[in-house]
Length: 164
Image 1 (cartoon, rainbow, N blue to C red):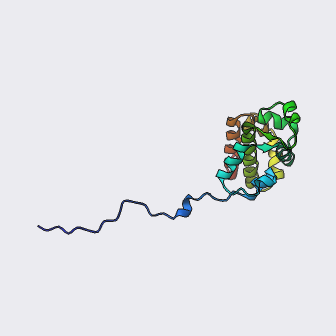
Image 2 (cartoon, rainbow, N blue to C red; image 1 turned 180 degrees about the vertical axis):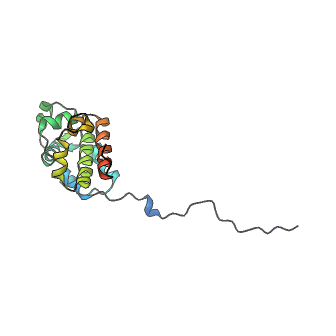
Image 3 (cartoon, rainbow, N blue to C red; image 1 turned 90 degrees about the horizontal axis):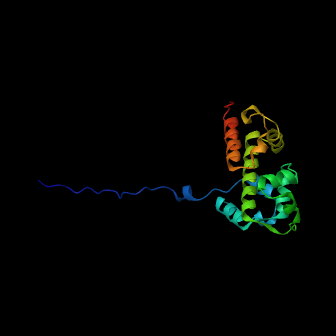
């Protein structure tokens, strides 16, 4: 009995390389950070790099102003004392652990703007107590990573029309 050897394909997936290239992040993200340092960023890897390098104090204060946070609220979210934050020079680079929280804030507010269609509507929602948050405003939960997750999850529910 003779067997014909069939031409078998290699065991590999042929997918377009474009699927593995990180997508350019949305412009509002970088507008909230508002510094010239962020103008060249285009991917999640760039965001990680920025968080590792830290941000100048003036970028953090600009962020706080754009999202309607006072210095006490910003200091609480970043886990830094208000006085320590005030002592930094405007051009001084804030440590990585604080920059990471700032990136989370920017990601949250960018996502909120997408869901609500307006940053002003989202800022109002963030400061309004809600039943889903046991009568507290969502902004009060941003001092922990679990709190950030809760707010992100609620944004997903709102986006999909699931009001619990």
